[in-house]
Image (cartoon, rainbow, N blue to C red):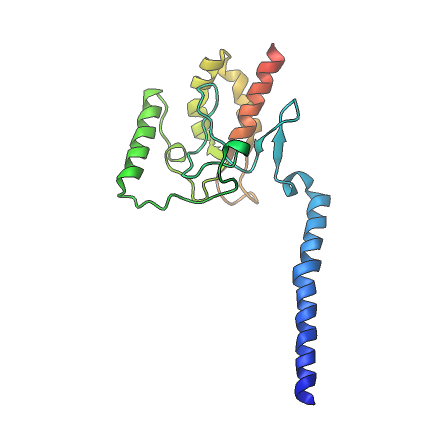
Length: 197
């Protein structure tokens, strides 16, 4: 009889733990996230003036035009709506430092930036571990400033305040380095162009 009572106790304990960890805790986190941080909890999705989704402020996007600040390269395709297949993937290339494919890609990217008289800093040459990094360093943004200003036909002093505005500081004021959110910066430049017209 005591053996059956112990089994019943164990099943009750499993049921209580399941309720707490699988239902109550996730539901509490969901409610708190939606109440306190709705923008972040819903993916930090950014929309343009026509209410069309342009991306997430948390996930890096690929920009190739000279009129945009270029973001950190990725070894995976960024999740960009219908053209990305599959969406939602992340990860590094897993190529060894001696791999010729990796070396060729790095040399080609460095040469591209040198041709534009841009110092090829590490964050525009090497991919991030997750492949989804939305930031570049402040010095990399300043290196690209001349090209973007020239292509858009505006002064660098018009873009500098935007770089400062979209620079995220250190996490908890001590971890990491400040970084410029490339999607937000490029969208602000597009808005500036629309307002100028």
